Image (cartoon, rainbow, N blue to C red; front, side):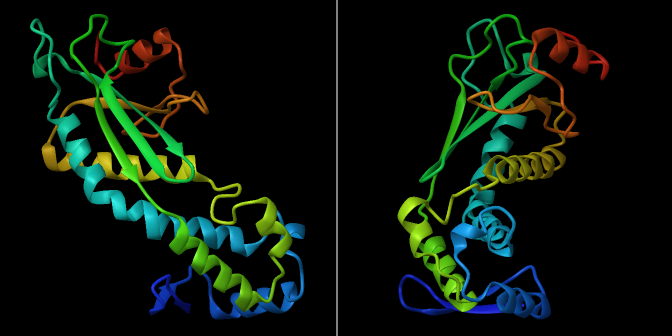
Length: 228
């Protein structure tokens, strides 16, 4: 359904909601007069918030991430004297979300796979964002549902509380990687992981979980006829 709201510049906007008008109205009748803090984990608002974050913030980075992936898939690194782009077989991409304002992404030849350093420095991408517009929309949505969020707002940030951000970021990175890889016709493969160690290392191309040890990574790609 379509939802009308006023953006932070006081302009009327319309955004698509991934829910039918019937479900929206049923939910509204059910939660009217409730406190948001009592609906902490299991309510439509959190699904809509994640959707808005993806559409309003993460999707705006697609062009930059595609360009970043293209550099990786063309092996556009600054190489050591003994190395060249032909030596890069497997790369590792990792990211960290500074939850209030930035997604940081970096990439370099896979350390477990390439024993000797090939490049002088990793490739980096910093994607800055603001949450004011999202927060403004969420408050209007909660007002439409006639939910009391005053107590919650004092203690938590509605726009990022329990946000499934690693899942959303990894989905976007994989989508951009696959699209760009097909366009570049590159044979480079890659791993993906969250930089602070949350979760496990996965395959960028297939979504398979690899594991975090050097032996597991080497064995995984060996099965795909890529040898260290």
